[in-house]
Image (cartoon, rainbow, N blue to C red):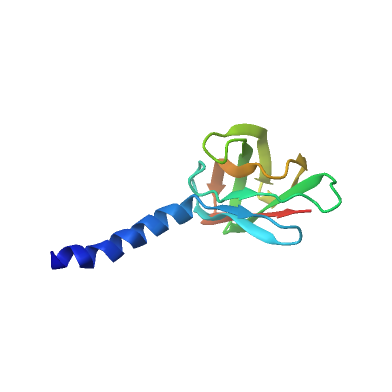
Length: 141
């Protein structure tokens, strides 16, 4: 019986860690959010992507999302898809396919207009070659 009391806090900690991986972060205007953190070269997919939402503008205007890649090493190519969920992050559809953040070792910003406030977004890395790792940041206004 004593070992159960020792195990319960540990299990609660595991549940907290699992829940934090699916936490949705609000990307407020003027702040930088790391959407993908130090994704190893060759790794792809959505498991490394932070789920995020964009709050509405006070003036009711359109929201713009800017994505940038920060390479570690000689990263040659990073592309991906911006995906959106209308059901709180359960299912996702592709909003913009084939966003090139790094091409031929040159980083570029990707600007996505008409971001709908309140929906859940993520970045699906589809190509990630060269270098050691890549981090992808997002800003909104």
